[in-house]
Length: 314
Image 1 (cartoon, rainbow, N blue to C red):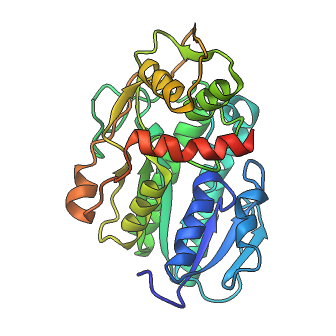
Image 2 (image 1 turned 90 degrees about the vertical axis):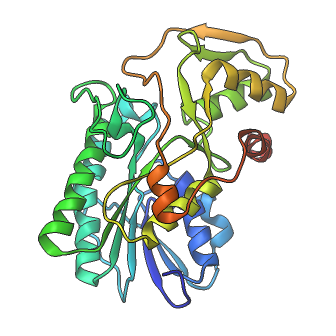
Image 3 (image 1 turned 120 degrees about the vertical axis):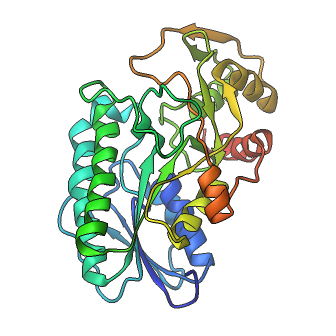
């Protein structure tokens, strides 16, 4: 699909992943209409694209009806606060962008005859009882817990997407994003990579929750974006897990970050937050077999690339 003169509308374009997605689409020959209300996104993430031919940023809340002038070939819905610090601070906004926002972006795709890509999340699996998590697993989600504004909004977003596919014949794709890291992450993101890098660079203790035995599989953002576009261009409307198979405990990760930074910071243990998943690793066999996608960046290489960003940002 990625050929010259095609036009993409991207919501959440000023966010961490959304901004990298805009870069890749433009480099692939797309024109990009970037949509963001800048609630958690940052204009700084898109400053390098100002004045670039084929790129325009519209300050738009997609929870209100969305209008884009001219043709649109694909609609990529990446808008949503996704950091744990956002869940207690703006839960209503998170529910709205996953429900009303998804509805409006699907409506835009339907009106334009465009293919629609939903950025869903591994959080649809909740605190999984199956490991690793295949797309066929329906999850273990607390619908009224502190994370439910995000988890259930994304589950509803998937339901909306499949409803439009079945009722209207809309070309839809669903991407389930697992833990992703890299340059342009928010410093106050609240997730493990910004926390560890910020603490290590400042010489502060690295905070490890629980005993540090909980695991994550961390995918570098360039690999994630390549996976997202493989899902967009792929043949299948059912969800695809996109993430890394390299599972690491939070205690191991703290030690790796200390080594990469060259930090003498101590490790400090704190209580585990409520509903924090204990294991998170995708089964990516579908993406590998159907799309030919797998991540290429090792954890240590990705962390070294990310370090330079945090050095300059702090």
